[in-house]
Image (cartoon, each protein chain N blue to C red):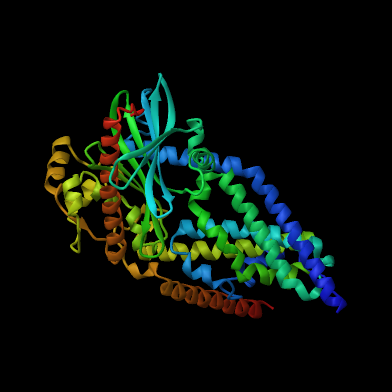
Length: 208
Length: 304
């Protein structure tokens, strides 16, 4: 028997942002986290695009979850995600040309992200549309937060700029623009998240 | 067995629904998308010619597009130029077919409106009326002549060449003497922070001002960019640097015959752009001279 989630809407959003942050806690979608978070602007653009696709896909799958044959779940998810990505890509190129020029190449990559498929499999195919919406929002925001943070670190240390504006005037560690430095940063952020959780649990134990 | 049939049916239905949705969105947005692309193209061209919000476009500026096609007739290869021509006071497109030796072999009127010539499907239709099988044709490239009244202002060349990773699409602006007056990188997929720096002013602007003779011998040198040169190249980015017109002239003279300083950690991308630009300009100069000769010989009044 399917048991619906008992979390409230805000709890779902905070869950996606902190507890189960897709990049730093679930270790999903490391590809874009490492490869595309070279600047804040790239990270921001991709994060927003993933947010849209995640929310739309979660709601769609939650709406049709009773009609999906259990053995072709994954192809159905991929089909939904691909349709939404195409729709968003076309809409952007037609009505928001400036934004499209900035993030056009990234949008097409979203189809392959593990995080969206995982979330559909774990949550959306079991929950109602409302709850799926909030969960998708939380996950998307968690991804956005992660990408912007990584972009911030890598752009500042790698290029000395922020959003294109020169801040430092020199390039401290140019290799931060390369993918392998992305792994360093992701690992570092994971350590930070783990440490914060440790401290938080300790404080909770002391209180209770 | 029943399971398989069910799966196949459901999957097919899902695919059909997805295709329907995507197709619907596409038909609704396609026109707007094409309009945006053309607007973008137009803005890039005007930007290269030096016009922007602060310097508005004069009323007598006209952009004439010339399209080049390759026509195959069995083993023989011809070049077909779609040129805007003025006849009886009206401007229309005509096709000039040229053999490899530079002689005009055919001249035909094309049934296409001036504004529609931007669309490749419209152009192909008009060409198909004139070039019949067994002859075949395919599109090669195009160039745009910008005229201010009766004077030729510049040539604009869109072009594409291989870069370090995939292709690099650029637009060049040449003076009537084939000296580079502007370079704009339209599309590239080089490494961010390394090869992608080709879009930065301090690399792109090095090409500006190179004469045609220097261009033919242009090389890439692996030396650090001199600080004064960099400041000069980026003077527009940092809001009017501190350059007086005399200083600008002085630096221009000093570096007119310098080679291209390579980007740090992106020698291959720098080489790709330099050789790509060289090839584009050399080929264009050759073809343009040939076209001019034919226009003069045949006394064809081109719109430029």
